[in-house]
Length: 258
Ligand code: PGA
Image (cartoon, rainbow, N blue to C red):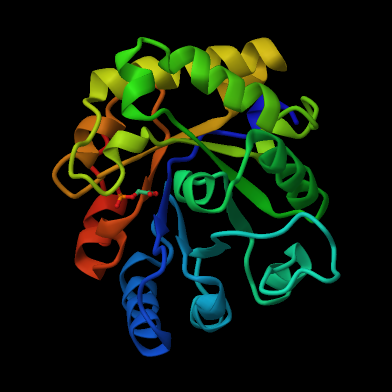
């Protein structure tokens, strides 16, 4: 895709994780619809638990806010009790899907290879994957963050070509910053984001590196979003805990564009 067609519009995604129920998710979606619909210069995505995707997508149907799923299986159908296919999430209104979130890597044996299969299958179905990468504290302390993230990108994006990579969103989420209140400093985040952009340029084409959107995630809140978004290679945020309160999430989406 030509670079001109694909501006790096800031994208703020709210990962609701395993929280809320039909009523509270509906209330949150209605509040967001009221206050964030049609906001210029921002892409907004909410990512509810799978059983709530349909209800949330129905509420947001007429709005500019998109809905994503947290997890899918790459296979089209079959004997996979408890799993969800891509066609299922697509048929209930999801247009984005997380891949490789660190909680899936930790609790469900997600690997770079399985992420690769999911990204391939999601792109085939026209769903935008949000591919999560990021290191644990021990890896950072060993000075191996950049090498570790490169490997996640090399394998995870290993089955797509330059035509497709701009349809993927990358989220850099240092595992030590998720749900801990310990946000990466803008300098720490920028260092990795700049490296990711360069590495994607190396894997595909420099224009792809320039065009791809790279979100930061890990304890993003209303207080730290402006500093993060001021970094040249941070194109948005993947927000967990702070996306569950409408007013806080709205403030994050309306970050100061400095
Ligand atoms: P957090 O989660 O904002 O609660 O740290 C971010 C994420 O896991 O996507």
